[in-house]
Amino acid sequence: MSCPKVALAGLAVIVVLCSGVTAGAAEIRVLASGSLKGALSQLAPDFQKSSGNMATIEYGPAGATTGRIQKNDAADVVIVSRSQIEKLQSSGKVLPENLVNIAGIALGVAIRKGAPKPDVSSVEAFKRSLLSARSIGYRDPATGSTSGTYAANLLERLGLAEDLKPKLRLDRTEGDVPENVFLAVARGEIEMQIGQITEIVIAPGVELAGPLPGEIQNTTVMAAGVVATSKEPEAARAFIRFISSPAARSVLKATGFQMVNEN
Image (cartoon, rainbow, N blue to C red; front, side, top):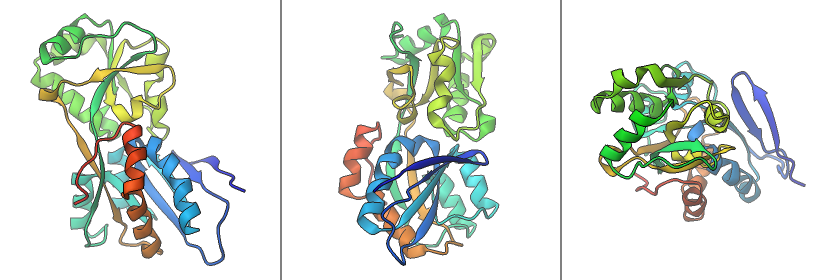
């Protein structure tokens, strides 16, 4: 009988799938960007059922996750942005084989559930909504968040950074529980927060006001690779194949991801 457990280890949420493990089955450790939690929490149990292998998944900001691999944290699979994993591969931290694109993540605006939706249908409408909002949030770039880094740069590009500075509220949570990134929005402390759509859709008490306008949208391609020091490289490859399979794509789409070419 399946018995998923959730435990805290350091600063990362570990999802341990502890049933149905057959004799000789592999145990793999996956370090993944928190933006993938909504999909991987559904896909991981199916991977175990189909393979008999056990997967432990730890979530965190993509930048911090990349840093853990750079510091030789033990893992078998790493899933971060394509650019981050390419750097890991070039530095010998990920095996020199084809990387696999899992999906794309777009940015959107989160608001408190039931609150009036700001107009984000065009760049000019988005700018007006920002200027009229009493408070605006996004992830602190210092946490290693790709969405936070982009949001900060975006406000500069739009020429709004100085005008908005008094009402900016940066989220500095560890990001190991990605759905908690929007707690201040759910509590009504922040009126609108820019973040990854895949995290907004799993956050309690908030809803998606809409994606960023196409002209300023930023879609991050998340990719997976086998860590060079993996003790179970074949099981790691099997996990990557599973989460990039046609069957997995339906789960990814349902949890807010955009489909991309695998390579």
